[in-house]
Image (cartoon, rainbow, N blue to C red):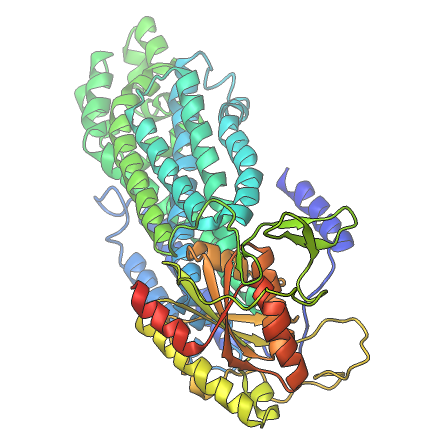
Length: 613
């Protein structure tokens, strides 16, 4: 079933999806690929061998081969990390883990992937090996039907995921990812606690509700978490980030089988041998035969339960014990309820262990999700503007953006008309509890082209402002640009057709980039256009942005307009920005900016930060 569905969607994707990224002649990180693939494979193979009995042990974790594989795999993975730090074109950008949203988002995703994969595996064993036979589905007659019915009974899990995924994705674009993802992880853990309290022979509707909640929680977590991870990286690194996210998710699913299976066997091994031996002796099986069957590794019983097979007849046939009991006892021993009844008690002990572990893992994932940033404000923000105080954006019938003035009439969008008489720049009123400094295009190629004194002063002031924001523990977002809009213009722009020189887009040394800074790369004038900046700011709980950078009438103004449209309070540090065209700089600062937000000098902004902290 998977193959035709996969082929269908592969063909659909090939025909409909279009490449929008910029391709380049990158090099393949051969040593990184080899060490990662072999190292991870060795660890997963070790997990597989660890589930099999070894010697007199119920599992194979004492097997020297397992030790060698795990040790060798971990050494290769450590070598992989060392290689990635040194090669020029690494397979994985380790620097991305300095971004909180990326690092903690992937950790949360790994925890949920382990819990989800292991839980589905356990549910299949529970249904096929115990619940379905206890409800009239015979091992032999319905062997081919049991997996299908188990899949049907688990459908509420899929339905919950399908229902919650699109809704949570829609809401995360408007409310931010942190709250939804954290709530989903908490609900995911709560569903594990509910399953842990269920009896072995449960009422199906309660089971259906709990797994539907689990699926809803998974969907509630998945979309916002993926959005947060992808929105935290520059556009040109999203392919790498997506691959890293998928690696965490798939590795978690693969590891989950070994982890949950090991925990289940640990729970079974305490009581299953005694329970199986006692049950066989009650049905007239000789003590030595019952003891021999009871001493078999619990993993064999688990595999039998997963396959929906009653192993009792196969286990007793070699000894001929079935021929020495009555017909009634033979019917009980080979019937569909004897083995599930024997297995149900020990299996429940294992369920408690694995579901408790799953709940703990989910709550740790919720904590990691919480650490990605401060909770965003749910309501859309009404931006303050210098032109009218607190205003509310509106739109006319012809699509022209307008603002409601103090006297109730509509005025055209800022920049289209001069400020009316009496509308003077508004003094900075306050700095919100969660502001962010957004520095636009202070990169080597652009700054080097602006040799005037105004640009040098702006760089100095922007650097000073960056230092103060860091000192107060406030968010700093450093933006660089690597492209331009594709439309034709009369004015000559950078990067026309020739490739940009090496280092052109690197941030200037004066900014002294720190691990706590957030880096955004844009390919248009506005830092909000197709960069994930809005998602990042909302995940951080930011309500107000302070803007600085080059050039005033281009990148700074475009970003200010977008910030206003997105509902942020905007503060423009007028002496921390410059423009090669003095008239354009003056027009932006005197005519446009007062209608987009509040204008202030760096000194005024720093004084307000001190006063409000």
